[in-house]
Image (tube, rainbow, N blue to C red; front, side, top):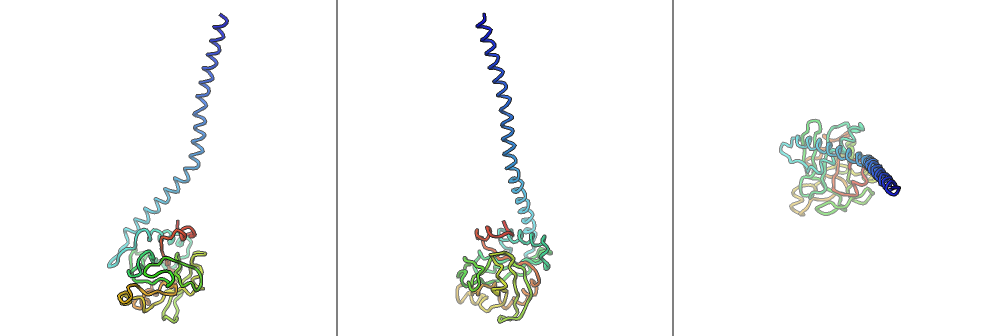
Amino acid sequence: MTYKILSFLLLSFLSLSTISIKKEIPLKTTENTTVIDSVSKPKLLAKKEVASFEANCKLFYDNIEATQYSLPKFESFLKAFEGYEQLRKQGKIENEILTLVDFSLSSNVERMWVIDMKLQKVIMQTLVAHGRNSGEEFATKFSNTSESYQSSLGFYLTGESYQGKHGNSLRLDGLEYGINDNARQRAVVIHGADYVSNTFIKQNKRLGRSYGCPAVSYAVSDKLIEVIKNKSVLFIYHPSRSYVQKSKLVS
């Protein structure tokens, strides 16, 4: 009889222990879930913010009036728009024009776009040269160093116009440290050049190259400079990983 009572008590104790353990398991799982949520929620919010920004950019892009011109690739415009919006919020833009140069494209095509951001309209599209040491038909190498004769990527504010050895020219101020902030020191400016023309392309199978300046045709230089001078934004794009890693204006 005593043996039976002891067996019953032992079974009852084991049953109660099992129930207690089962009750504790969900609590541990809940704690773990809370830890995971605290890590994953900021990432999810960041992803939502990126998706929302890209959607707004795409809406803006789709409403740009191209008129007789083409639109830049959305990939390049997305980066340009991202930096432009940051600079606008910082109060650095006085002339609401975005000039986008896409150096992922051949120099033989019109790869400079001038966009009126208030009117959402392309107002110019033209040929533009890259630096002689950046590449032949395509620009592949970039530098912020004096006498490198290479182009520099990134965001610039346009400065004042002046008369230089190429005639009417426009000074540029690079806004990105270590990427293009030596632009004024290097005399990287917008100017006209006779090697920027379809005639030169036909004769040489590629556009002419500069010492690092985004040179344009004399046929459009005066009009371009007049439109974009005095603190508008110039963005020189290339899908370079090193640029994205260094830049604080694009992600």
